[in-house]
Length: 495
Image 1 (cartoon, rainbow, N blue to C red):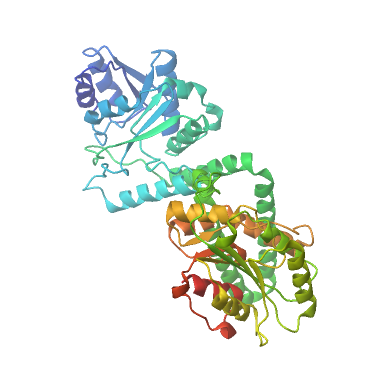
Image 2: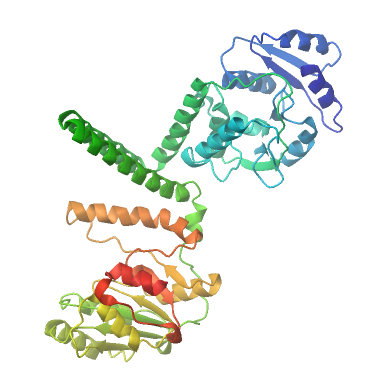
């Protein structure tokens, strides 16, 4: 196989190649075949060593190419014809800078795997790539495990090689992770991957285990450098949960085992869902950046109705009204409807006093002639009075941003959005442990999984002040408020 590949590579036009074969005591006579062909091809080199794994072999080859051959660009490829030498010119052509990392990719448009590839090998490849992309955090790279690559010498010289500990196939993802850490320009070029013409796969269970562990290691070291406090807290909580569950296991017998198994399953499922949500945003921070509030606003197009239901809120309602009065938007395109029960004299008095003070005619107090059953009942009543395009709901203790209407108007005009999910204010988190957990949950949701929901066009369910829904007056209807909680009411309205 080696002579045929070397002969094929040596015929490529306009490419000055040195070919380094790394042989780790292969029993099939690879070294002798290479030595024989070295007499015919002066650019062929052989490195021999003990069998220590793919990763160690690649490091030896890289070291020789950099230090002895002074190569500018180093190419990895297999010697079993699964990588077509004819693809090499395109890969080298894509490596057009001093800090490039080009991957011959099976999983980008135009790329493909072998049609006669055994199904178990395809599943292995897909699973390994999923693990590398979403556990190690190497997305948006599509083919993280490809062994057909071209890496600039400038990238390899800057890599911290002690951080690459892999001996087996996980060397590929550790190398890619280090290249990303060095801000290399990573590209993917489509290739047609073929089934090997000779030999068998050397992938073993030890390689699979090492791959999984190194995927976690890459994720942990990357995340730990950014969020050491959260990672440490998460590990401690996991240890406490494991200790508690283990104690139950040893004391509750058969029934305890059933409960232990069920609790473990549910906690694991929830943890995996949460992990996926976190990874979605953290693997590509641009996903969050794209959803940040615009800093340049479009001219006012939509009009806004803000509904403010209140009950026994006389101590805080005045500040919220003043904050809404300070929102910058044309007066004829905004209104605030404050809804109070007629038996809530304290809140009504506070509202009237504040309205006299600020003199904002677009802020109105609504007092139904009946006693609303709950908060959704108040929202139904106000919805019937709303006169503008976009409806949103604030709590009586909120402090709306002065540009909130300009921001939502810009996003709706720019993106054609009908529902806009805004951020939340993280307040009173020092009051007690439950508030701290609640605030952390909101923080992680708004920094992670809600961005995935938005990409999938899923209606978010994240608190009233977070939703701005475009609902022309002719499309509005009332909902069965007696049977709906606040968040369920908002979801029904968004639907």
